[in-house]
Amino acid sequence: MLHREIRIIDTQIMASLQNGTAFFASTSLIAIGGSLTLLRAADDVLRVFSELPLGIAASRGLWEAKVIGLAVIFVYAFFKFAWSYRLFNYAAILMGGTPPADRADTSEARAHIRRTASMATAAGRHFNRGQRAFFFALGYLGWFISPWLFIASTAAVMLVMSLRQFRSDALTAATTGRDPPG
Image (tube, rainbow, N blue to C red):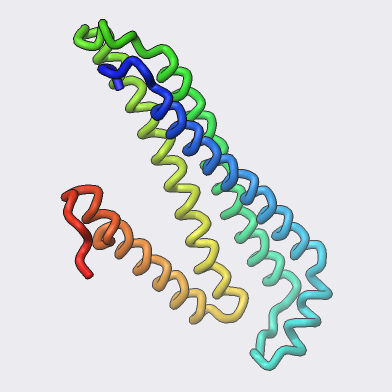
């Protein structure tokens, strides 16, 4: 980026990252609202669940504890996405202040790029944590059926996440530049 005079592509990439983060932040708010609705309608939901052939029997207190736990996960995700959005904004501001290409080889320019990259990296880290919260919320849903399903669904989420993190085609493509196998 330092050596290019035209940085439209860089700003487009940053805008894309911000839009995706904003989408997940607003989705988190909808999920929080849905969780709070489940909390308010506990009696109706428990009645519906008791009529299902799944054998789910939960007290109102246990149901409310489960729903509050789910809401807490979504609140955590919201804060991670909102903070990530803010950090991506800071990175965009830093990107806008990047020295011109004719000063690319100065120590000031290199320090500026390190600050910009560090800000974008921090934003990405918080975004990933928000996404992980969403994934674990899916595993958490198993608890509404049974503790054993909760354990199995959480283990499944962990397995899928670890495979995607450490053994995915995307990782191969990003780190080696080779085409993924298969």
